[in-house]
Length: 62
Image 1 (spheres, rainbow, N blue to C red):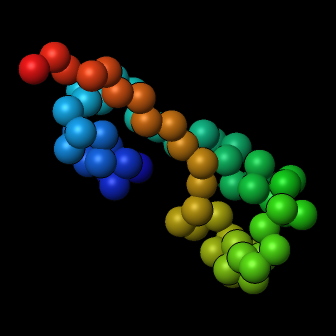
Image 2: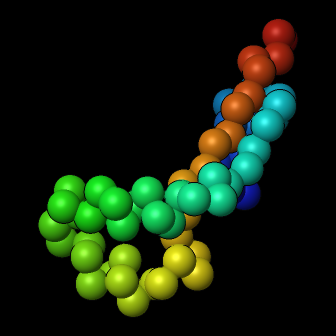
């Protein structure tokens, strides 16, 4: 999430929210059929680093 926050800040956004979805890894597993070349990586990770999150920013006027 830090990478996403830094990316938005670098484009002039003020971060208003940023968090991981607690059920994000399960969502990845539930949609496993769409991750053709990455299945081994996803299973090996076991939810330690991978997840789904949301970062919201508000554009700051110049």
